[in-house]
Length: 153
Image 1 (cartoon, one colour):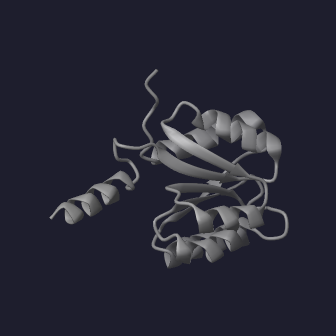
Image 2 (tube, helix red, strand yellow):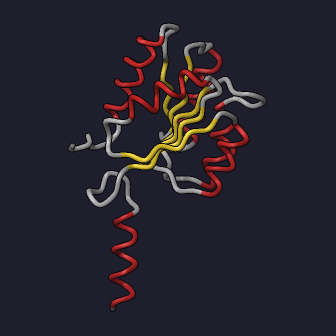
């Protein structure tokens, strides 16, 4: 009986949006200023952020750690964000992936929509504009979709 209660408790603690733990987020962007801005914007939320600069590092981190959300830049070093999601999603079925770019092509948006459909709707594109302030406004809008709690200071 104690074992069953421990299993239920541990599963509850690992569910995103529970009051018992912060959300765990991965941000992957090969542009250091964008990465810093995204991390800075998340600072007001009760979350733990891990950042990386390459697709290979994102895949490694996704293989080793548990994340609730992953913000992946579409244009990375030697692989697109779409490729990262395709490779990582089967091993991380509960992660919600957000593909971020200011340079979406029609073909890539269609590919992202198909990928999202194939993976049960847990992949969403974020369109950011060229100016940093506009990127952050769009990023802020995306954060409203998540079940993140604001930090209480």
